[in-house]
Image 1 (cartoon, rainbow, N blue to C red):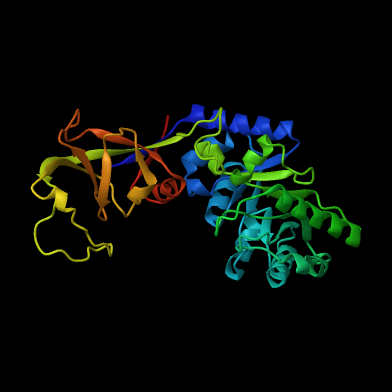
Image 2 (cartoon, rainbow, N blue to C red):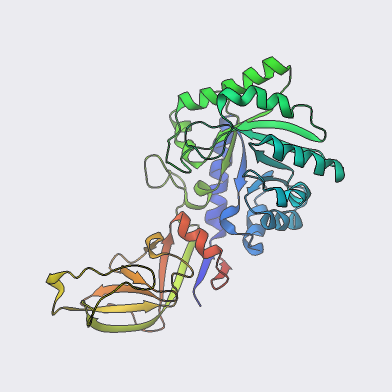
Amino acid sequence: MAFIELYKDKLEKNYQFLDSLFKKNNIEWAVVSKLLCGNEKYLTELLALGPKEVCDSRISNLKQIKKIDPNVQTVYIKPPAKRSIANIVKYADASFNTEYRTIKWISDEAVKQNKIHKIIIMVELGDLREGVMGEELMDFYGSVFELPNIKVTGIGANLNCLYGVMPSEDKLIQLSLYKQLIEAKFDCKIPWVTGGTTVVIPLIFRHQIPDGINHFRVGEALYFGADLVNGGTIAGMEEDVFKLFAEIIEITEKPKVPTGLLDTNPSGETFDVNEEDYGKSSYRLILDIGLLDVSEEFLIPDDPNIRLTGASSDMLIADLGDSTGKYKVGDLISFRLKYMGALSLFNSNYIEKRVV
């Protein structure tokens, strides 16, 4: 069985780096845990670091978080579905919202459960995922302002999540101005403007975060040290908090070109023959992991001599060139992970999760 290792020292290093960075800039922050897919072992390690607030997009994950630490504030970070509202009010202290009807349902449920549910109103800043349009925000806030058992504690936005629209100082100023307009019109106080995610962190180093942006939600930088603006890893952070290991189940020298009539494979792919490969062979290895667990495009072999060439549902194929090198059947091949690859692997029940 393939397995993932979490390195506690690297996770803690990244957490402390971010915590220090945000404190220096008078910013509160929440950990985004959705990558971990509710894995109790890994959530326990994450919560042991002491975050005050944890964000997730799956109710079952929030339930697991509350089981481990009932005192941590939990936030549901996508607009709630009607059929999930009872559990959202039960397991989430706050939620992101963009629809009045949904907030009214949450209000009704919060009354039933005798709870105050916090609302963060998400605002559209151009990436065209969730968010109230700016010109409608005042009326929207006015409609939810006095709903019972609802407390609007923040406004927020997401960028770079759908169409890749990048954050800028101007967009963040726009978001913070919305807060000022709401407070002035309704004579109220909104504590948080949550405009920051991993993709916004580089703006901190360039001193381009407006004073009004006082809250971040961070996942990818915590787990991968990722600099999503400049590429690579943020200086001082670790990129490999997690690592995948898969076992070699076959090594054989085989032709580079398949033999027989070619058609579409079960994944819907067709193979284009490189005429230069006719008559040539290479050593190919097969690993005990496949598309059911992860797409090969999200895996980065630690050994640069290994080239991934394809996958089926349960097997991953790699090319070793004209030598088997140091490998034999039964050996483990290690991989660094891209975000979407890690997400798939954590969601697979077939991949063992270990802590180092």
